[in-house]
Length: 85
Image 1 (cartoon, helix red, strand yellow):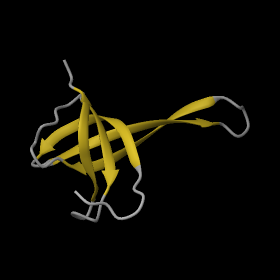
Image 2 (cartoon, rainbow, N blue to C red):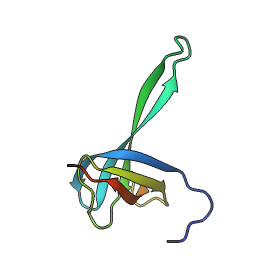
Image 3 (tube, helix red, strand yellow):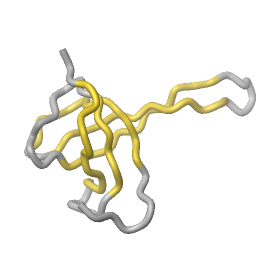
């Protein structure tokens, strides 16, 4: 697959696979609190395209930006890093 320019990539965990060819991926990041200087976890959920329906809940995956595929899908699953047990 050809890419145009730099695309963002995130590693996250699949939290839902109930849709056809779509998974919901939760991506965690650490953010430093302005006042208390403590690191806080922030979670963002992305709808990602899974062409072969290969992902299951609990899998660690890498997603990358893509053109809009639907109203909520702007990401694709690049590969599965670790399968859930």
